[in-house]
Image 1: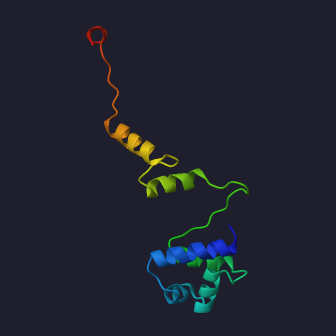
Image 2: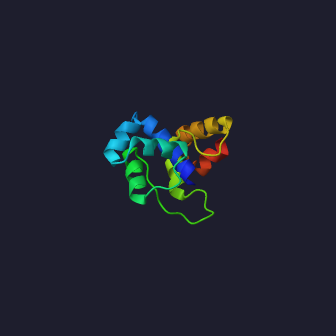
Image 3: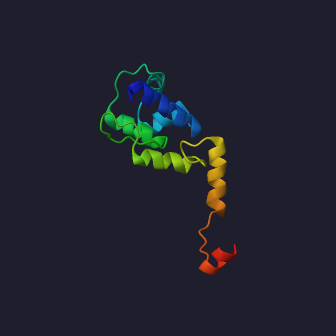
Length: 117
C-alpha cells in the first residue's frame, strides 16, 4: 500500500464516521490543507506520528507485514466478521452453507435402527 492508497482509505473511513476534514485536522493538530492533500494523494510524505493520529481518529490502524503477503489471518477474520457470508462462496453456495449450518446435526443411529431404516 502506498501513500495514495493510505489517503484514499483514510478518506473513506473519515466519511463513514461522518467527520469533516476540519474535525480530524483540529483533533490531530494538522492543517485542513494537509488532510485534503493527503486524501487526494498530493502529499508525498507525512510523519508517522501524524499518520497514526489521523488513522486513529477514524478507527484505522497500521501494522507491519512481510512484503509479498497480501492478507493475514487477522485480515481474513475481520472480513468474515464484517461480512455475513463466508469468503469465497457463490450466492448459491452461501445459501447451502447457511442452511447446512443451521440444520446440520450429527445423529447416531443404533445398529437396530440402521437395519430397519
